[in-house]
Amino acid sequence: MSIVCGENIKIFSCNGNKRLAEKIAGDLGTRLGDSEVTKFSDGEISVKINETVRGCDIYIVQPTSAPVNRNLMELLIMTDAVKRASAGSINAVIPYYGYARQDRKARARDPISARLVADLITCAGADRVITMDLHCAQIQGFFGIPVDHLYGLPLIAKYYSDKFGSDLSNFVAVSPDLGSVTRTRAFAQKVDIPLAIVDKRRPKANVSEVMNIIGDIDGKNVILVDDMIDTAGTITNAADALKQRGALEVYACCTHPVLSGDAIDKINNSNIKELLVLDTVELSKDKQIDKIKQVSVSKTFADAIFRIHEGLPVSMLFN
Image (tube, rainbow, N blue to C red; front, side, top):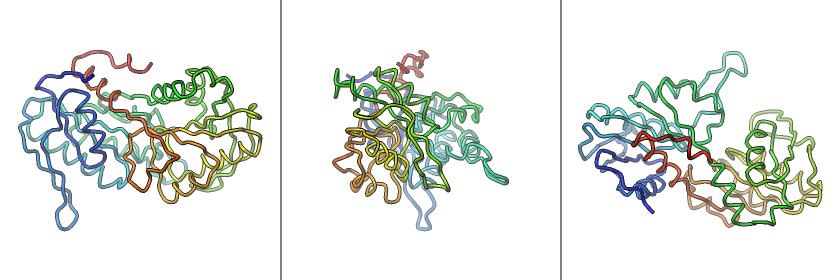
């Protein structure tokens, strides 16, 4: 059932994930705003807003997924366009926030790109950011404007509860690395199953080596839980290690299916029986394989937008 919003709210989309934007608009009982996002012959971004936005509450749906820099510039330029057209408020709806992995100085002379992107979005004119499952939750503090941080975990937990029901008693939730323990523990509590952890060493970027497994997974089905899968090295190595140590079937899930490089080949050739992802990042046709199942976040974002527009608490959505 769609939510009926007033005429003062308008949903616009750039090219990052127009399918998701259309679903969000549909769930809100409205349509996407009339706009065009194209390129000039030299590659510069061109944005045209073909309807009035004066005094309206504008929500721009645009994940900063690949092509990252183009999608980011589309968001910034559309934000500037509606700002100069006297929009009442400008809300950047960023289902997947790129550059989130560079949130601190890990080495000398490293940039903090997550903060730079936050500054760019704010300077472009955004009054609020709505996002989901930031790679590092402290990125919320990089903004000087309100940030509504939504969670994909309830959708993932509901999928497995509906799929397996009481059969979940033989499952274990597994964190693929130490950084995902908090997220995996929250998932394990939601579906009421035990927790295990894969302890790994990463010798260099995008290369992981599994060391050992903390917890009992022998003779159990397991669900690997992560916020994003990029090259799929971590998740597939973890799946292989779990099978070697006695796991029966290996399932995996994540919020953001970035899936760059040869990630699809790795997943196809791995011990992962099924990979559940959300549609914060649009899957191209070559990534829509049988092993990957997708659940939409449109209702969650539509509910958040409705609550923000009506001045209601968004925290109700976290459960």
